[in-house]
Image (cartoon, rainbow, N blue to C red; front, side, top):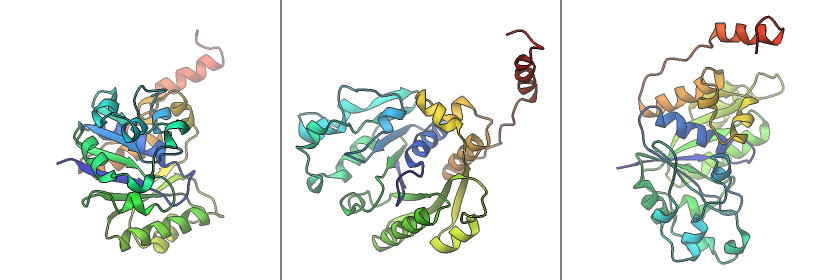
Length: 262
């Protein structure tokens, strides 16, 4: 049976989609077959950051036309598949979110992998939450700001009321600042365990602009190592952090100051 993991946040802009993509790639490096789906019908962008620009068939087509899930499962790398949701407002006009069987869509898509990662749209959408597979595991993503944590708390309360298993929360894009909440303070507020702290890294945006994951572009960065460790923890695997190649860094510095040829 595939494993269902939902990546959720109460607030947008916390890096949920980029983390979903990078976590999927990280899990694949441990030998898992991964399927990813952005459940946001209106503002989905998982297809964009994974390099799937203008796919022929999307989830929109499945919902309004004579298309099936198998028509919109795209393999972007070995053992990594994406089901693009679509961004066309013309088809969106004909979709009634209240009559979507998310459970059916998710289970059909999950047949293509070992782990099915779901990028849950920000905020509260009971139509989606109440239709998740009963063995879904939730990762709540938050930043260190008061608004982000407050919205994450609302999500935690909702999931508890729906009796959906919460693994814990991930503190994403973290950096040390006395005006932000500390990891311990957030854990005390949310009353669920902290699973991982992912440091802020500007290179994340650069890698996504190339349609690639940070764990591939810079595997020795603290952020990449944190994501790989998160994947290992979720899969019950061991992971040894990759240390930066000091000689490579030194050579790059020498080239910069003209001591080595380009």
